[in-house]
Length: 92
Image 1 (tube, rainbow, N blue to C red):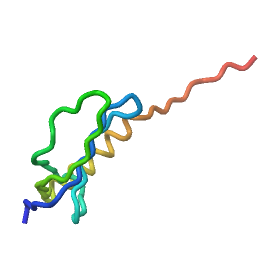
Image 2: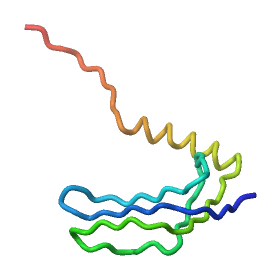
Image 3: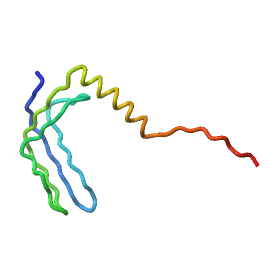
Image 4: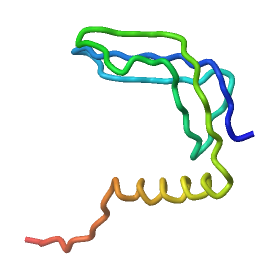
C-alpha cells in the first residue's frame, strides 16, 4: 500500500515571535523519502495570526530504492554543512 489517507494536525503561525508551518500526520510513522500531501490547509496566514486545524493528508510511501537514495543524499548534504581544513600555524 503506497498511499494512505490519515488525519493531520496543521499548525501555521506568522508572528514576530515565530514563522512556521507544521503538518503532523496522525497514527503513522514517517520514514525517509515518504511524501505528505495535506488537503484543505490554508495557503496564506496574515501577519500576526496563528491557525491550528484538523485536515486530511495522503502519505505516499517511498519505495526501498527511494528510501536508500534519500538516506544517501542526506548524508552528503550533511557533510556540506561543515568544512574541515588544516592550515599551518605561524609560530613567533
